[in-house]
Image 1 (tube, helix red, strand yellow):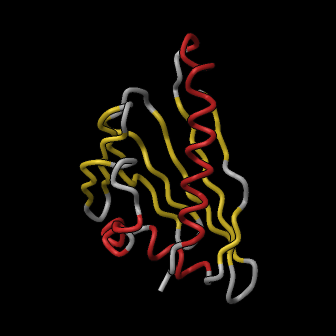
Image 2 (cartoon, rainbow, N blue to C red; image 1 turned 45 degrees about the vertical axis):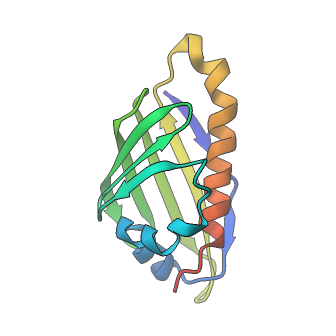
Length: 137
């Protein structure tokens, strides 16, 4: 397994508010219009599952497999070209601010590691940036 971590992102909302929004995937509806259509196609979701077509990778489905309120949400891949787990960690800074880090632990075949590592690291950083800018209200 190969591990990729985003940098730590500061969020101007309390830990519990961030956790509550991110741990229920139906809240994606509130921010769906901000995601470029060419980056994510066929986005579907319910409370625990997210499915999206990511060009050129194809269809990817993730399911929340663990919630540790108010600090961690863990996902596992269900439909993906490679098996992976994905964590969102949210920690308090003070009563009104929190910080976040994303982690992917992926089962990348040795021959594909050099080709996949760069885009995965870049992708997790972009997701972290996007999650840090969401209004958690």
